[in-house]
Length: 119
Image (cartoon, rainbow, N blue to C red; front, side):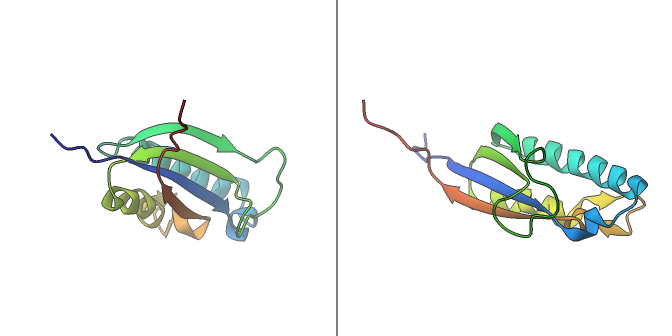
């Protein structure tokens, strides 16, 4: 039996100008791809999504860096799974598949550990 601890990961997601410049139809396609990406992350083996936070009501426009547009916090078993989660931005097709999700948004993963506060 392994005593290996999970990684606590914060996926910081920023929407870029390409999304802002898109048509309503293109934005809808991006949203559908975004949904598929989030589902893909949640379904990776050993991943436990702890929560998702969206800043879109108090932040308007692209977010090329911090503060980000939304965040996914998850417990993840290893670095390879973190990489696989980030790869969904490269591989998830938008609309007819001409472009992938990373044309419209970006991700940075912050990897740490659960903070255990002594009682």
